[in-house]
Length: 386
Ligand SMILES: Nc1ncnc2c1ncn2[C@@H]1O[C@H](COP(=O)(O)OP(=O)(O)OP(=O)(O)O)[C@@H](O)[C@H]1O
Ligand SMILES: [Mg+2]
Image (tube, rainbow, N blue to C red; front, side):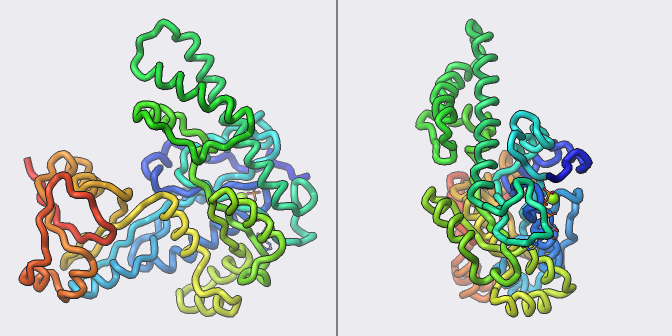
């Protein structure tokens, strides 16, 4: 068995919350390759983000640029001096063991770290190597998945039971929201007791949905599964990845095969070209990072809009369905309140026109008000004022 006591404590979770809606937490059993993947992925991210200072906030947290050919095309078109891609935050969470919800291993501390992220990337070990210890002694990804999910379920059950207790004590309180919270807790407690994860649960009453979201339950989070395979299996996967894929895809989740070993070796090359050559030798056409980012963005239901000028071309991230003022609010929180209108053109129309000036002359630029729902790839100029 591995000793878990000497592992470094994780940083306080408070600083994660700013980017909560754009963070991916790497979760799994101890020693399955989480840190290897985290390091490799965020290092290839560093090479890709040549024009953006790589931001390591902590060894356990890193931001990587979201690869985006559109922002580069815009910069080329308008001869912008700088390109700024949008970023996604990765958090390397320490290993979870059986009994974590009861304090085993580093216990609840990990679970709290997981609470802070928007997407859980479950790493499951799908490589054999007698030199690499497994805390359960054998390599069995389905068993590992079951262990992790059980711990997340038990942690949620504890949260719900605690909240039900507090609610009982506040029986006579007129505090707003308590009635909705009660309805939510009564609905989810039996589900958790039956071992049902809450990932597909929604509430028709908006106030109940708000209360449910506030609980930040672990099994309600979007999840994707990363099967960590040996370098040889990077392109093809293996029987273990197939078993994991069959199980998680049946639940409607996304499963990717990545090789920590291959990604780590590729990340060892300084430049992107050599990284790609190495990956191609392993039968891959893109980095694991690109695939993980794409899957995460999709799960998070995010989309991009752009601002472009002589100084910089920049990509911004918003939720699908965001309005123009909400998009402006991403640049500066005051802009949402001070929004007057937006001048906008789609990426395709701008490319067709050949420049902002030409787009304006040809009437491609539209003026949109407060109710405009942003489309993926909009280029914006916001008019704000008091
Ligand atoms: N795809 C792979 N093939 C072979 N070995 C791998 C692979 N991925 C990771 N390893 C090896 O497995 C060991 C454990 O990796 P790592 O430290 O990344 O695990 P971890 O999940 O972060 O562990 P912990 O929970 O202890 O933080 C390392 O020796 C690493 O080199
Ligand atoms: Mg680790």
